[in-house]
Image 1 (cartoon, rainbow, N blue to C red):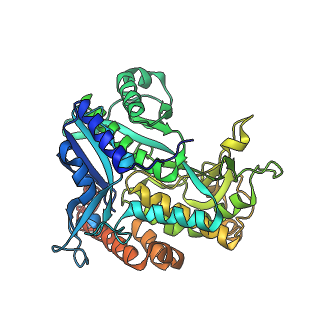
Image 2: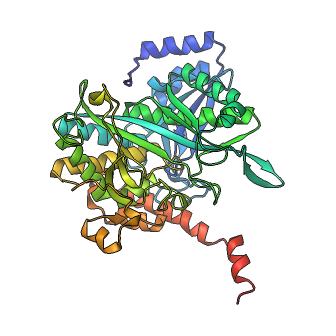
Image 3: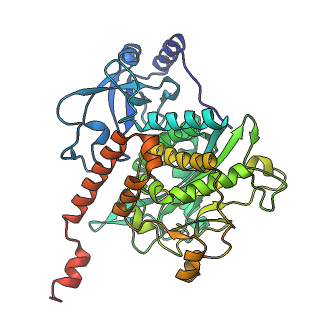
Length: 458
């Protein structure tokens, strides 16, 4: 179990000096915008101490710039004004895949370096984690599993890098050098890979990282994405975290494993319960179920996300929970024998990496916290595939289907008063406006599928 650390000014100078001694000349100031894209600026390392003190200039529009590089019409964050990128010194590290370069993650801040939760996802997560601890005395640990595809270009189209079966050793052998390089370079950045395997789709891979404090887990997610993509490029491949790049292959998720802790004690575990879960765990699960439609606006945050979320695909489209049930949006994995107290957790499945991980975790935490505050109960776990139940039975058991599109999730977010309280009206309004602009751009295009089926039919 790893925890984030703070860095003093003296320690920062020492870290910068150490980087220079290792041949680091340039420093990347990275941030994740609210549409989930990793962006940044590059400065000379000898100016780093001053940049950390003053912040790095960024245009007012950038936090809500879209993934398609568009300024959203009508936004309050337009062509005039600036923010400062405030580096988080504890995230500073050399980049093994880019010799001579280091990187640091940044928060958006005001010109006088005050926090800017109205635009900053990382600050939003920190605030909801602080609220969780303030109201419950507990801290959240998160473990992320990343699925992604290795693809290549053939005859003008993207194709999987292999045709291997699920878990097949042929893919392990084919991508051995890529995997070894990723694992080694992540380790050099302090990120522990717990496991790797070829996934269900052709060319699909999965890396699972050791659980950590929630903010640190999200920071490591950003560095892991950057590392995987960079190493893939060095192997003449493209690594994509797009949720559903191929219609005939499995989707890619970012499964989120969660547990609440009181010091060194996992408070989700109760050996007296038939399922090994505490009241706190049940309350947390119930909160997630209650707010699941709104949560999806942050965890399934792209238009393409909803091509992945389909019944009978182990992606989970029903708001319920189950013990080792991979068709429920909340799976309670079987804990490891002999370590039940440490490995009891819940897994939220309707989440992918095509969004901002700080917002995804913040939304899940907010939902679970509301369940704890209100003492909600989730009912009995669902032991069967909810898709196989008759609609009337699902309704009787309170099993709702999750949103089927991004606009449905955004409508649920707009109606969720708890999320408005947690994130603030200004943030919710700008986020919804940005995402609806993404949807409008998608709807402005005519697809090949439409042409093939409609052009001669009418």
